[in-house]
Length: 172
Ligand code: HEM
Ligand code: HEM
Image 1 (spheres, rainbow, N blue to C red):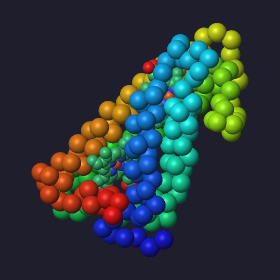
Image 2 (image 1 turned 45 degrees about the vertical axis):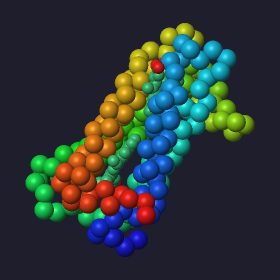
Image 3 (image 1 turned 90 degrees about the horizontal axis):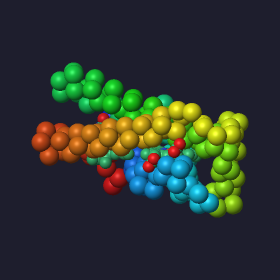
Image 4 (image 1 turned 180 degrees about the horizontal axis):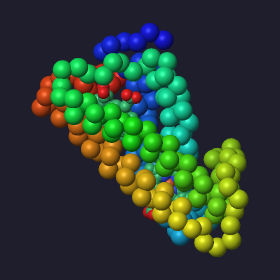
């Protein structure tokens, strides 16, 4: 795919905004396993697993030229910070759903998404599942905090620096 210097590809933009909505919904409907009872939050699992599937497509799209060249003209520390922030966001977009899937598998809960059954990725244990649930919860909170800072940076670019970074990711 040829590289566009000014904008992300349509696929990258669609996945970016879909992921943002899915992460927010997954977060809003999340629950501690102590409260699962007979009705675990299926929407939480479905949104989280969709995030994981989309990040794989997104990284492939990125590797085949879906991202524009980094912005030029700004201070180098800002470019480094943006790169580090995006890398951390990608890592969390992979690690958070994976640790959730792992925790759910350890809990021995079948994942049935409205008739579609998702296989476990770890053996079920009786009793305590260890730290993995906490790791997942902390990761989910970090993801939300970092995405919030990232969104604030996007708005700062748009309204303070007025360098049109937001337009690189604008849907239309
Ligand atoms: C971007 C995706 C996700 C985010 C932001 C996220 C966030 C969270 C948060 C914040 C909690 C703690 C809720 C509380 O204690 O009040 C939680 C719990 C949980 N999530 Fe996720 N999650 C995501 C994806 C997933 C996926 C894909 C699965 C499984 C397929 C999953 C399974 C679980 C489980 C089992 C718990 C309970 C952990 C425990 O209490 O030990 N999550 N999630
Ligand atoms: C959960 C929410 C979000 C996540 C996980 C997320 C994640 C990401 C990631 C990983 C990138 C890097 C893309 C790449 O180069 O491969 C990116 C770029 C971008 N995001 Fe977000 N994002 C979120 C929400 C938002 C919001 C709410 C805004 C707007 C205020 C926003 C504005 C942007 C912009 C403008 C870029 C392009 C930056 C550039 O051209 O260098 N994002 N986002």
